[in-house]
Length: 480
Image (tube, rainbow, N blue to C red; front, side):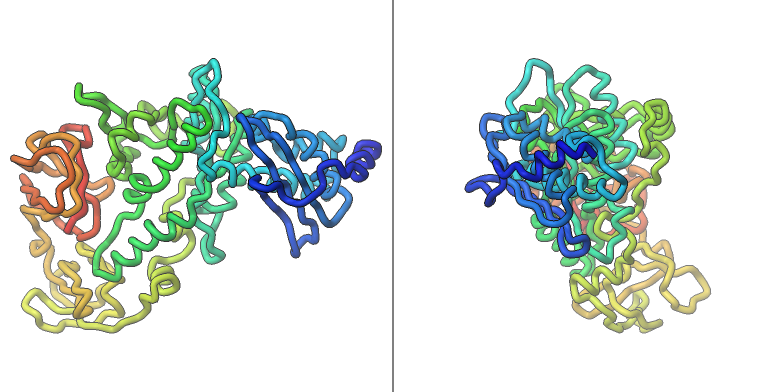
């Protein structure tokens, strides 16, 4: 460290003080390490108009807070969002390995203050001379390459990571939206020279997505929280942030395309059918599609990893998240018991005629089409063909009893006339089946009935029905 610089910051009381009235405050550290840093910022006209700080603990932590407060005051918000722990260390003339923790706390306090500003609804940056794009970064390879490709396109890139879930029982390393994921994504963004913001949506996510997930299982359904989250929570919130940052578009690392059929934008299948994510995005409004970009639309996963390796991105070989973000590292049954009170509730397993053939530990642990875990003796394979939440019964039968030629759906949204629907996908990555939906106008419909051209097996209430016209998504509904 530069002793003279450290002494200067330790003696500088210019900005030390209480949080600014109407400002945005972030704190990092606390009891475990003994160091605590707090920064409070006021934002006016896209700039950090004023800063106050306070710090407790070691000299490095106190000097880091003072140095960072001095450094960001007067800067544009986008410049402040570029600050990393390495930048803080540079202000002190370098720090030891032990002292790095203090610079991390100071940088994290700043970014937590910026996160408060990001969630405030106020203007953070004005549009510049170049096109500016906000990129959703999760800390994985797909979103990192999406940011890289947008930057290579010659636009100004800003990154955002959405924080949706915090739970000590969750494996944060496997979750795409945990506090650990935020730190990882911020590090990747800063390595690319991209400003980074965090958007905290945990409260609304717990209420609207996790709450609906628990309620669905309680009612005997198999809900699809990702469709709800993308369609009603995180994408539109990031688009709103893009507006406050002067960004024209929001770009994501999803494998999907946007196509205009002459009547406006629609989702379309990606080039890599094995990675196509249009099903999970089917809840998006067409107004949202008009503000979205999918840089990976024409790439395969292998090509994305290759581009990441060529660019030297540290996440080039990072494994993909397989679980739902709030289930990462924890089983569904344990989660439902902890958060929804859905513990063991023994009940009867019956056949299609109502004969008792076994017992189960709770209807919420079973879904239509399930074969494993039934523990019912039989001369032929048995599948769950239905669950009854009220009676706590699970109904089983042979595979042919799963067959459906018609499917009732609720809460349907059609972007185009029903006559254009020719296929439907009833599960993520499932085969799209021939489908007819005649005489239905575009708009919202409480209930509809789909006619299938071939039998569907394992049609699970609560799952999404993704309505297709060729490879275009023209609507979505929930299986009733």
